[in-house]
Image 1: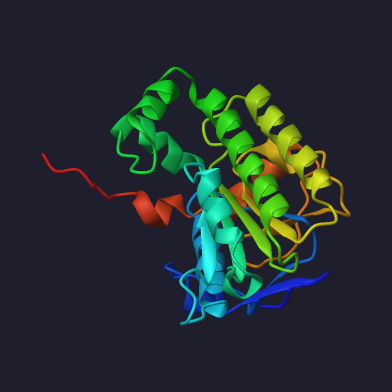
Image 2: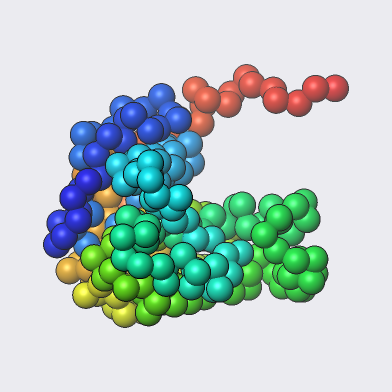
Length: 253
């Protein structure tokens, strides 16, 4: 992996849990890269491959935290403890992750080890869309906090966002897009790279081309959607739901 004005992630095929074969190199030339494709197209698998590639490339046996992963449940005091160490003991890379599907499971299953019972009760008070906004604010706040604390300014920051738009009405999807757009502008000159998985047309609109790339999840080629119908056609041409689930029964009577 190379970090600089052009960031490259390699060895994805060595860290993927999918049957897909990715191109050799994923170039992250902009602050934000949005990953497009229909359900079952490998978008989330690509994010997982990126995370594992970073963890493997930056692994050092003598460091307890070669890479440090931050989630919404991570406390700022934990970040302070890790990043306030001498430069030679600090992580080689920081990976921030947000998975809206996983966060929603915390409510329904009440199985969040990193959160107190009171936090779980607070989450129940809000709708799915409201929680996505609150969670996104939280992970953005943690990124900003880490950037203020860290001593080694050359350490790469990667933010992986998945399922942030799942199940949202258009108004909430537009709000999410506006929040991410503002955050991208705020980090235009930083070492941060954001990878965003989207299934919602609204999240593919109104980006600054000098800060954002939209790519196909399998080919990494740049894509553009001039209309909602254009996006629907793109997804329909690439869908694989019939070969994956038609005739399949995962339930047992």
